[in-house]
Amino acid sequence: MALQVIRGGAPVDIPTSGEVADEVDARARAFAREQRQIETEREMERARAVKWMRLPQLSGTASASAITLSDLNGAPLGPDQGFAWNLRRIVIDGMTSGATPDVLNMYRNAITGQPPLWQFNGNTFGYTFSKGEMTLGPGDALKFASVGTFAATGLIRVTGELIQVPAEMLAKIL
Image (cartoon, rainbow, N blue to C red; front, side):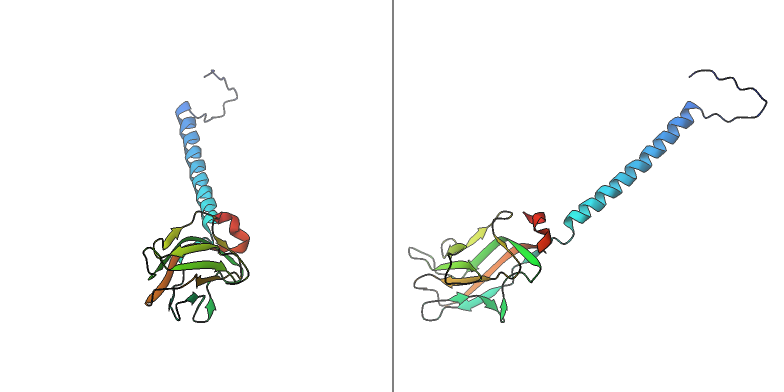
């Protein structure tokens, strides 16, 4: 450090190099705390409104060798208006397995007039879906119907897991 000469007789407090280093360290620590807080708030904002949920359970029994599962207590199985679902896992248990297993198709909104979204059978009754692979928008509803003769006579249950977000935040789960 260069030597300074001060004239005039007034006392001057000049910090030592150690005091300057302490002040720089204190400000760096304060800055780091502020940055951590900002990053925490950013992470919370990214996670805000993203909700993991269990798929509301559907259940029913076959009648006349057929089964249709579409509603639970009269309510459509799908996201409420303003929300979107990313289905992550669906399991349908209770179907007959073997050489000619029971087959159930999953549809979006209607069982007739469109191709199925997915097909389940008694041998392969559960599937997992990756992000964005199986998405339902506001007002969409899942419907399930048998394909061909349905041999099972007991209780058939549809269960699963999903991620829900407000529709305008759909990019958060894709």
